[in-house]
Amino acid sequence: MLIVVSPAKSLDFETVVKTKKFSEPAFLSEAAELVNGLKKLHPEELQELMGISEALAAENFSRYSNWSIPFNLNNARQAIFAFKGDVYLGLKAETFGTAELNFAQKHLRILSGLYGVLRPLDLMQPYRLEMGSSFATRGKKNLYEFWDCKLTEALNQEFEREKQPRKVLINLASNEYFGSLDSKALNAVIIAPVFKDWVNGKYRVVSFFAKRARGEMAAYIIKNRINSPTKLKDFDIGGYKFNEEESTNNGPVFKRKQKN
Figure 1: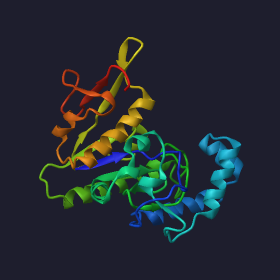
Figure 2: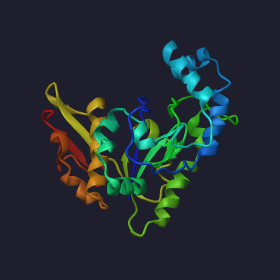
Figure 3: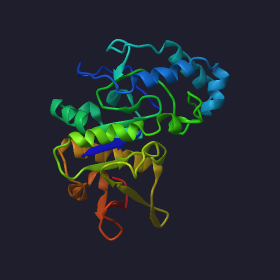
């Protein structure tokens, strides 16, 4: 069973990381190709491409100017500790022990516009490049075309190595990032949990809360060593409860009346 999540715009390369263990991204050469193209852009062009402020454009211009391989613990950081958005606030990877990190390394995958797909302990240098960006190289019009079928094939190779007969992908990523995969070509059953909160008299998906819940569910799977989607029904972190009436086989729904 594999879990996919989105990356985050917020990064943390300052907090001390407990582990010295690391791995290398599978698509580092592709990332280098993208960075070489990004290095040719002026801050003003980055600002327009990414729809960001002048200050953020200057920051990312500096990031790409300084981006270099090979990666090591002095110039890069493990992905699971580098991202600090809502998903990762829910994940709380800093609380993971060795056993949890090992399980996460085997089962958790982070989809990325720059790095393609990352394992938790894969080293990365800071960047900003959303999967929905129109930037790409090789004459491609966007990153979806650039990555094409590579990420789907990479996950399928992992499914082939699994011993379990039933292959399952838990989709905890946003539509933007899950769109980088060809769901029809994935050799796995796709389970996409939905998190709803009670707002203004009805249940609906609230982006901020849903992102946090996705991270919390990923952590729940990791900490409980879950290898079957049927066990997801017991997820109750943050006050969410499984709702059987609205759920489908591939889309379990979790509702919360009020935030704890």
